[in-house]
Amino acid sequence: MTAPTKHRVVVGLSGGVDSAVTAHLLKKQGHEVVGIFMKNWEDDDDSEYCSSNIDFVDAAAVADVIGIEIEHVNFAADYKDRVFAEFLREYQAGRTPNPDVLCNAEIKFKAFLDHAMRLGAEKIATGHYARVRQNSTSGLFELLKGLDPSKDQSYFLHRLNQAQLAKTLFPVGELHKTEVRRIAEEIGLPNAKKKDSTGICFIGERPFREFLNRYISHAPGPILDDRGRSLGKHVGLSFYTLGQRQGLGIGGVKEKGAQRGGGAHEPWFVARKDLEKNTLRVVQGHDHPWLLSHHLVAQDVSWCAGQAPAPGAYAAKTRYRQQDAACTLEAALAGFALQFPEAQWAVTPGQSAVLYDGEVCLGGGVIQVAAP
Image (cartoon, rainbow, N blue to C red):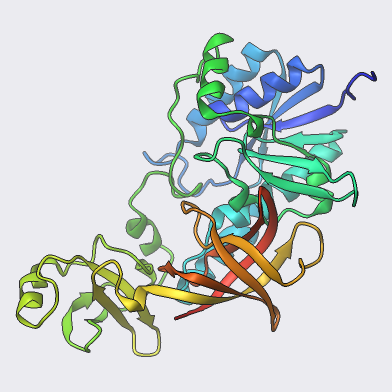
């Protein structure tokens, strides 16, 4: 039996436990491992919300324990041009983008990959919960779901292409999160108990509306229900997303709802955004017809195999935290269409529709239109 090939692997060390265990596992397998800490945001480094400096200290401490070198690399200019500018454009257009998808495609597996190759790397690795395998029949590299269903991150990685997948390792994708934490404690990693980061990379834990306020022009306008009645004022359409329940400022009209035939205690949800009239439309009840879609069209498409899968039956996610939903794939102008036998809730333009064939992530596109 031939010994596994040993590589020079550059690992993206974020300061979190997943990337730390990734570096440890690769070193244990005999690879030559180098760590890189990616700095992607620097507009307000000194604020209470920006944890970049703390994360670097944690990443450096991890590198020390594992016994590898670490380099601090600044990708902030690339990030601003390739991810943040697009993020703002989408919000200004009334859509809800997913910057993590863009960050993976443009920074972690493009700018970072290029930098790693310049350092003489043969492979890169990150702490994502996903897997890569080469199909023995076609020779193509496939992106697979992580083995821990509650942590699978293939949704965020669906824009990776053949060249990127061929050079990428995801060691923790083979493990459950509990096992990753156990390994971290066993080898004495200083961040073994560090909580997982939440929120968008460049926003961190800060209030989202406060952050967007600094970058996006906004005009207040009316909030109308599905019958055209005025319920109050919104603070700017960019600050709302379909399916949103909190922060609408219209809780006081619930009792009126009872008098006019709505459910007295049903919560209100954002259902539509009319940019032309600067109007926010809301409905009462989680299963209101305006919140349900059987059909969507996606554009700005990316397929892992380099070409579209054949039309037919698959499964899809229209948001990260949801079960795969059965669907039928059809070709559409500059993209694809999906038909769902069961209605999908709050399908949101700007988010990604990601297609699966069992455990294989095929790719996806950006949702343009959702329809009943």
